[in-house]
Each structure stands twice: as structure tokens, then as C-alpha cells.
Image (cartoon, rainbow, N blue to C red; front, side, top):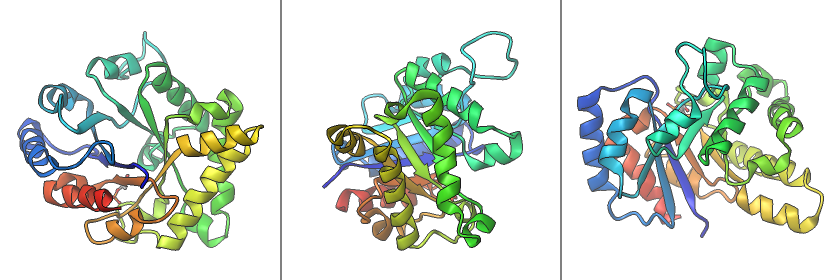
Amino acid sequence: MSKKFIIGNLKMNGSIAFYNELFTNLKEQLRSIDPNNVDIGLCLPYPYLFLAKNSLSNTNIKWGSQNVAKDKRGAFTGEVSAEMILEFESKYVIIGHSERNTAYCESDQNIAEKFLRVKENGMCPVLCVGETLIEREAGMEKKVVRSQLETLIEKHGTNIFENSIIAYEPIWAIGSDMAASPDQAQNMCAFIKEFIGGNLGSKTGQKTLKKLIKVIYGGSVNDKNALQLLSLEDVDGALIGRCSLDAKKFSDICHSAHRN
Ligand code: PEP
């Protein structure tokens, strides 16, 4: 059984009272999950990282942010650096989520810079890649995902993906109640591993990296479809949007991962 990664993306939701309650419920409901089998992370709005540090330290739940600045420090009004995120003992940072790419015109170059900042600070990037519905209908989904990964490989080399997470999030499946089919999810997650592994020279290197690259699926995962999606060979976990706002649903998904 390989370790699964269940990461919540809380987006711009919640309040101090909401997070206090969510953390209390999750600590209780996830108590029996062995962190060697399932790695659980909650990616929060920045102001609540301090709460997570206070409430979740010494539990099996980790936390992090949903974005990071591409620069290290300085005159960048409104930005939050990787160093600052790390001060709150964060483990995960989501990068390149499609909602940011659309609303804030995030480029692949920016995403590559952000990825590096997260790695330099010893945290784990959760890089989102995925195609639009039009691109899938045109049969271009692999081409699109490959080009998203290529910018990173060109800038930093393939080894940058070691100990990182790639989240395959087809844009049409996010917030839509139309999750990818098991075939679609398995196919793309396997493709991502093969593509990154194939960019490495030696066979041993490929094998090792393939083991170290974690590819998770995101897009309308819920407590009903999680077990099936998480049992797919090349799906190493899930990125959860809406269901991470509900302690019971999120913990049911984590327990499904535990059973795989
Ligand atoms: C997301 O926004 O990353 C996501 C997966 O959302 P949802 O689970 O709500 O589709």
C-alpha cells in the first residue's frame, strides 16, 4: 500500500470561530488515521495559519497556504513570502490553482518561480495542472498538461519534482459536481508520472523519481466517489475543495484513503 495524500483547499472561506470548530472536529475524527498511511493537509487563507500552528501542532494534520509570492522579500505590496509562510510551520503550498490563474493572470513563468521559493524553504509545493473542457473535447488534454510541466522542467530541471505533489485538476471538474471518471483520472496521473520520469536520463533515476513524484487528483471529489478514485493505481491522493469545509465529509474522505 502506498501512502496517500489528502489536501484540503479551503479557499477564501471561514473565520476564527469556523477554523476553531473545524480543527477541533477534525482532530477528533482523524485521530485513528496513521500518518504513515495518509498525509493530511489543510491549505488555509494566510490569516489562519497562526491558528493552525497553535491548534494542530503535534497532531496528524498538517497545514499550509493556497499561494505564495514569487519574490523573496521587498517592495511587493500585498504579497506573502515563502519565508513568512514557513514561520507558521506550514508544510504545503498550493501553486497555480486554476482559480488564481484565471482571476490573476498567473503565468507558467510565475508559477515556476513560486515553486522554487517553496522548495528553497523546505516546504512541499502542490502544483495544480489541468485542461479546460474545450481543450479536453479537442483531445488536447495531455498536450496542455505537458506544456504546464515543461516550463518548470526547462527552468529548474526534472529533479525539482522530488518530494513535491502534482495535482491533476481538470478545470471543468472543479466546483462542478462532474468529477473526472476513474479512467480519465488514472490515465492523466499515469501520464504525468511517465512524462516526468521519462525526462530523467538513467533508468534507476527514473524509477526512483517515479516513486518520489506524487500525483493526486482534484475536482469534485466527495465522500461518495473518494474510495473509487483513491483506489486507482497512479492516483496518490486527492485535493479537496468544497468537502474540506465539512469536517465529517473531509474525514470520511481521509478514512477512504486509509482503507486503500
Ligand atoms: C479545488 O478547487 O481545488 C477543488 C478540487 O474544488 P472542488 O473539490 O470543490 O471541486
